[in-house]
Amino acid sequence: MKIVLKLLTAPITLVLDLTTWIFMGLISCSSVLFGLVSGIVSLLAIAVLVTYSVKNGLILLTIAFLVSPMGIPLLAVKLLGILQCVSGTLKNLG
Image (cartoon, rainbow, N blue to C red; front, side):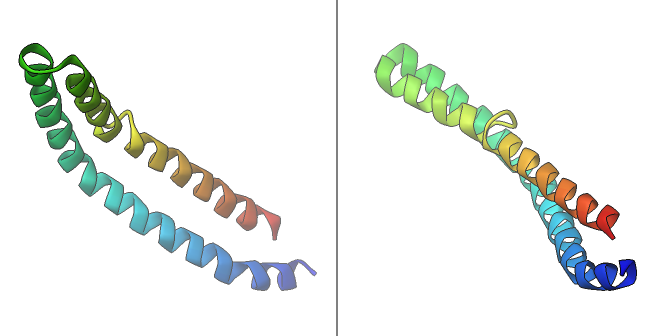
């Protein structure tokens, strides 16, 4: 029975592992780009905040936070962790 269960879950775990591997590569490559963009946008936001409009400066600071490594990329890493947990659970199931 365990062999049948392993044979049924093997393709699913293979797809999950390959997807996780691809997403880890994408996240690691994009982290450098997101860090640079976040720095540039935050400097622009401070300049706008001081010279032009407080509202627009705060909007730019929010965008800079979302693009920073603590914003949307952190959410992607957490979702990737959940995907790895599901893959590990399927591997231990059989």
